[in-house]
Length: 267
Image (cartoon, helix red, strand yellow):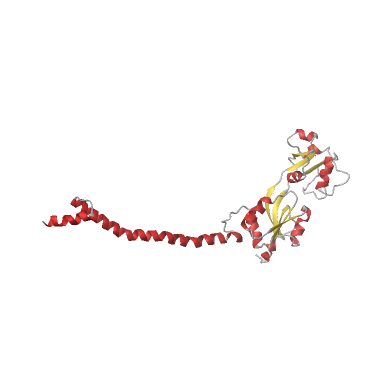
């Protein structure tokens, strides 16, 4: 590990469609003294941002180009086709790519899917962004095939979507520069992988067990005090038992009665 985590904050990049809210909330609970800064970045620029030091880690779409970036795959998204609500596609639960053969399918320049053979008929021009393509779908120009999270991100009341069963899928991963695997990066990896606060991995979890161990001797010492009292009380208990025994033999039931019975036994 390097010591570059001296920065007062942790910078987390994320591409469109990824919602890092859950992980950010856990970070703020576990490391409240280390602010987390979110950096939105286009999918095509995410790797360059990490390489240039613009973020400590980031949620990106695979594949990650080059070997200098580490990546932990997190999940695979469903691919859907975005259509107007009155389109024939809405009559079925899902479609295949070949079902779009006679449709104009838009392929924006920031497309995140890797096609071997793009479905549908090509448009005259490729939209610059997915947001631009959504506007064209609403205008009835064509259809758009995207990861489901992007369809949700650009949701419109006049549009809907259906899964495409045989389309390539988009995989989301946590990535960071291999040579910059700092303590804070390790902490965030632990959060993403679901490690608990008591996990032995990660710098942020280390103090908790140490504090617990420090408290155990104090608790033990508190328990030993009454134990010593019980030990001191045992002879008294035995003495009381013996006295009670004498009283029982004399028929009186008490220590004083036992003493009064002694002259009678001598007589």
